[in-house]
Amino acid sequence: MLNINEKLKAYQSLHFLIAALILWALTYAQTLYSMVEIWWRSETFAHGFLIFPISLYLIYQKRDLFNSTQKQPSFIFLVLLIFTVLIWVVANAVDVIVIQQLMVIFMLPFIVGTLYGWQLVRQYLFPFFYLLFAVPIGEFLIPKLQQITAAITVFGLEVSQIPVYSEGMFISIPSGDFEVAIACSGIRYLIASLALGTLYAYLMYSSYIKRGVFILASLFVPIVANGIRAYGIVLIAHLSDMKYATGVDHLIYGWLFFGFVIFILFYIGSFWEDKADDENAEIEQPESETPGSLLGSGKAQKSFLAGLTLIMLAGPIYSMWLLSQQQLNNNSLLTVPDVAGNWILSERAGNQWSPIFINADKEIRVDYVNSNNDKKVYFYKNEYLFETQGKELVNSMNHFYNHNRWIVIKKSIQSINSNQVIEYDLRSNQGKLVVWGWYEVLGVKLTHPIMIKIVQAWGKISSKDAGGHFTAIASPYFENVSDGRTHLNAFYKQHFLEK
Image 1 (spheres, one colour):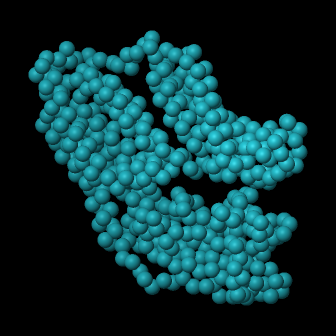
Image 2: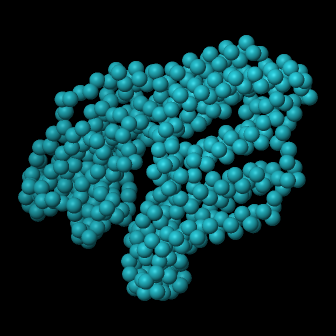
Image 3: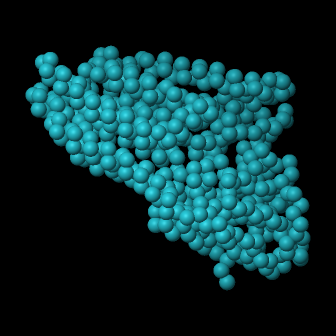
C-alpha cells in the first residue's frame, strides 16, 4: 500500500498528463472537430458521441490502478508518437481526413506511454482501443455490403420459388422492381453491432477466445441479418401487392428487426458470461511498490513532457509551412483534346451523364461524334491546381456519375495498351452507359485512390506540384457493354495514347 505522501506524489504526476492532453486537444482541435461534425450530420456515425464518455468511464472504473501500477517514462512511446505525427502531417498534406483522425486517436496511448510507460498503458489498453470506434470509418464497405445483401435477397426469393431477375443492385419480381440502395447496405447496423458487441465482450468475458468469438459474431451476424431483412421486405411487398414495406415503413421494420437480432445475440452470449467470476484477471500488480518504481522520476517526466510538446506542435507548424510554400498557379493548362481520326466535336446535347467533382478549379465538358457511324463519346476533364480541405481531387463527395440519375451495375479496372482505367457500367431511365476514368498526378496516370494520395503527398512535400487532373469518357450502348467499350477504345487510342 502507498502512504499518503506517495499517493500525493502519484496524483501530482497527473498534472503532466493533464497538460499534455490539453495541448493535444488544442493542437489538433480541427481534426477532432471534423470527427464531431461527421457524428452530427451522419446517422451512421452518431454513436461517436458516446465513445469518449464510455472510454472515460472504463478508465474511471480502474482509477486505483494509476497509483498501484509501475510508472516510468518511455522513449519507445516517444518515438511512436513521432511516427504518428509524421503520418498525420502526410495525411494533412493530401487531406485524408480519416487518417488524420486515426492518428490523433493513436496519439493518446502514446502520450500516456511516453509519460508513464507500458505498464500503465497495458492496464487501460481496452479503453484506448475502444476510442477507435469514434473515428467515422467504414463507408468503403458499402458497395460490398450492397452486393452481399442483393445476393442473400435473390437467394431467399429463389428458395421461396418467386421468379426473380437481378442485375447488379436491381432486383425484379412479378410484383415490382427493387433496388438495393446505399441505405440498404446495412452499414449502420454493422458499425453499431460491432461497437456494442466489442464493449459487451470486454465487460462480460475475461477469456480472450470468448471475446474474439463474440466480436466476430457481432461482425458477421448483422451482415447476414441485413440480407434476411432485405429479403423479408421484398417478400412482404410481394405478398401485399406492393402495399407494405415499400416506403418509410421498411426502415422502421429494419431497425426493429436489427434490435431483435442484437437482443438475441446478446442473450445467447450471456450464457457464456465469465467476467464476474474473474473480475480482476487483467490486473497484475508489480513486484515492487517502492516510490521510485511507482512514480518514476519527476525530472524525467518534465523532460519527456517537453519532448511531447515539441513533437505535437511540430506537426501543425510544419503543415502550415508547407501550405505557405505551395504557390497557386492560375495559368491553367487544361484544354479540349484535338479531334483525331474520324471523331469530331459536336454540340453538347445535354446528355444526362456528368461527373460530380466538388470545387474543381476548372472543368471541361464536350461531346464527340464519329463521322463514320454517328457513335457518340462524352468527354469530361477537370483540374485541381491547389488542394485544401473540401477541395480535393480524390474525395468521398466526388463521383464518376450523378447518383440521383444513374445506378452502378458493375465497377472494374480495364487495361488499354498497358494503361489502366476505372470502368463503370451504368443504368438509368435514360439508357445504358459505360464510363472510363483515370486520374493524373505529377504526369502519372493512376486509378487507385491510395496511390493517388501517396503521389500527391510526395508532390506537396517536395513542392513539385499541389494538384492533379481527372479525365473521363463515356459512351451510350443498347445491348452489350462490349459495344460501348469498342467506341471508347477507339476514341482513347486516338486521343490519349502516346504516338
